[in-house]
Length: 347
Image (cartoon, rainbow, N blue to C red; front, side):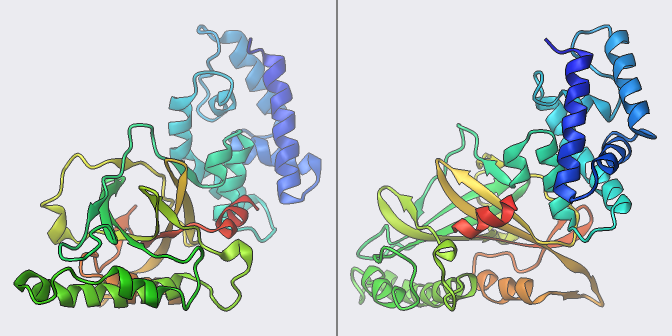
């Protein structure tokens, strides 16, 4: 049973969590909670509004106040509240950012707010595919001895189509010198002298070059501590390295309009956003980074986003220009998961 006393205790716990997360005095945590999170003048007025709402509500377990209603998350049927929180959280983070003097990124502030409301996956940017979500892997090339050596599948992130390219390899782990022999063996053609094999051969060579360059770009082979070792992706019991990119508009017209779709909240912020996708208990990383709006038809890329453009998006199926969200430009990519991604998203 939800009571005003229970929710008042929850407010006290939230203020302590906020203070501890930002390493500030407990009293200051109460003030930040009231002003930045619940948009009230101070903590006393916040608790007063809470008791007024709980005593005056006509429907049990509801709060009408636009910001205080989020206190009910994890206390009731809360999916609608969570959906609204996704839309409101940037306003909370902006208010919080303006009230603290410590150096903390907007991504971190948003993560703290999600955790404040008990949303652990959202705070770690974990996106679990719904149970009905299914990736339909298909052979990419027609003339290989092993027609499952390179697979592809398409899906949507929000309204944008993406293509995943999975390349099989034999070594147990990612190593810089592991891929050449594996590619040579797996990408042999069945009948090299046939007309279709001759026509497809240049594209197979292009794939080898694209794959090796992409692996080297996204993998830190210089340090390569255990936490930075990418995980392989298993498809029908075989080991693959999977990379993905937004699909070229010229190809989206011919694909199924009912592609499986992941809905995620990409924020209009400058910091890189790293999401962990869970596909049937396997993980991939979706990276999204803000790039400056074009001036004189030229887009200004940072070093990382320029690498994505020149290497990952060099694939013939890839969209060559950034996606547009919130009237801003973003460079996006999909790569294998490593433990460091979870550790960094949990700090």
